[in-house]
Length: 199
Image (cartoon, rainbow, N blue to C red; front, side, top):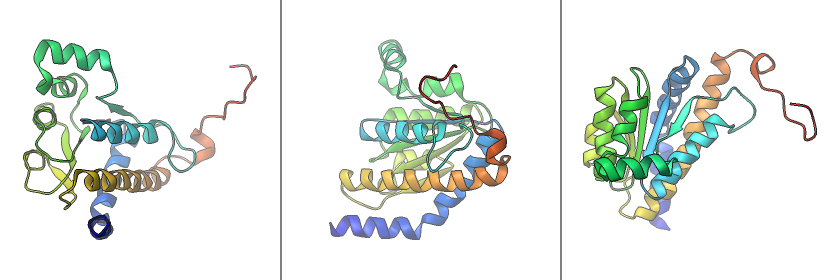
């Protein structure tokens, strides 16, 4: 418990970095850029959770934002793993979908998983920015990325718990900035779907 408390205090201290991420991502997504995310295991769940909050909604209505979780399609990941090896399952998708100006956000508790490190390198190949959320630094993933957010905890469990909080903090900052950049909600929010209504 003490380690978690310490890690959360560090998160609060480093919230300015997440705010900068939120500003950059909000402007990127509002202007037509995309966020691509990936991770393994629990980090894959965090990557998909982040995308769900952006494509859906986090704190109130707003326009859907263009984000894709590279972990979500089992057919693609199994095909790429079979044909190219598991180290390439994310990198090849980054090369397929990434464009200059996009952001590729990779999550890894250890920062050593070869497939996310390869995805960071692929991001640079296509002109996208590579960001990461990791456990303690130094680690290979953080070293390959333009920006990283590191949790200084020795336990995988604690790193994952803080990553989940960081994902929500990041979403809050994105929403805050998007609302100041995009037109007023009344002009762009999709009407709520009422059961039984014609579509």
